[in-house]
Length: 398
Image (cartoon, rainbow, N blue to C red; front, top):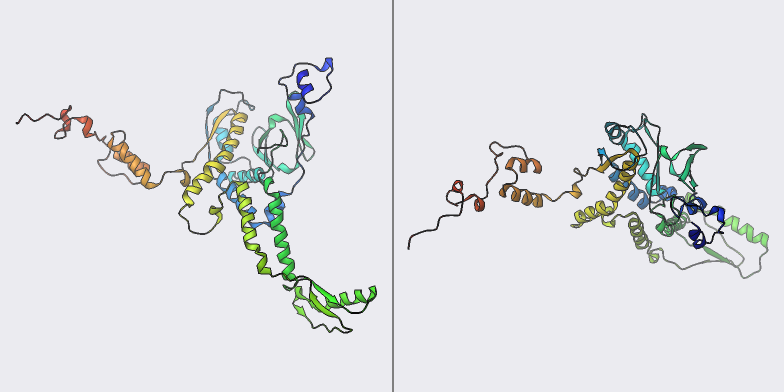
């Protein structure tokens, strides 16, 4: 692929101008397969309430959606000879002997949000979550990936299920969806640190000690130590300080804490963080709002289901069985009762389902004599006697 070498500026040699599986594989081999510039998203997750709440919300909602395992796919699978019942057991009941499926899925999804990657090791019997932060990916010019390394242990590509978030930086690793909000998270941390320091200082701004006389460095240092020894707001100590020699105390700044409007600044920055996670801020606000249900539905359609389906696609390719999500118990994705009632009433009146079937779908108990198909009057015959069939007889009276 000499033409591709020229495009990316690589020196072309005749003996290297050989056919590849695709024109970018040499490019794969030369790319850095390591992580992006390291950002400790876990620190933000541990220290910022909005990040912790948002990440946990997505983790919980994704983890609660079961997998439905269907028959084999037409494509080529990585694992050979495994039974569908075994795949269903691994994905919905017991991935390994040490974890229940809920804990396993939550570990994986937390990695997906904070690191942008999920790495799952399959030993032929069980599935094991591998912490994404310490996994190295080694690129290969022919096979795309040569191996994965975790704690100096190498894993072949057919042992690892790798699910990655979207990335502009690497074809090997995904990027945390919190990356666009790094600056915002740092601002919130800085505001919180400022608030802590402000109150640790007894809610008093920096002070200036003024003297009409020129003081030596030794005297200056002694005054600073004297002030620090007597004014200890962090421990509640406020001993009076006696100043002599014409020394006066002035505020360094004349800033009113209320004027800084930190609360609104934090609120706006929190909205940016939830936006990067794909969560409508309304869902994290405890206020009562009529728009919660449509926003919850939007949240599932635009954030939760895409993550679930990305995981399912990777599982389908790996095991060779079609893996889909089961959303029957997700209330946000179900029609409202009023809409459901109108829908099933139309099916009953149209002669498509019975009243008993409609009641079952709506969650009501069965009633006697409700298992007959209702024949619509407009297609059954005369409105006087529907059993006769045909159109109602026209009157002959004049």
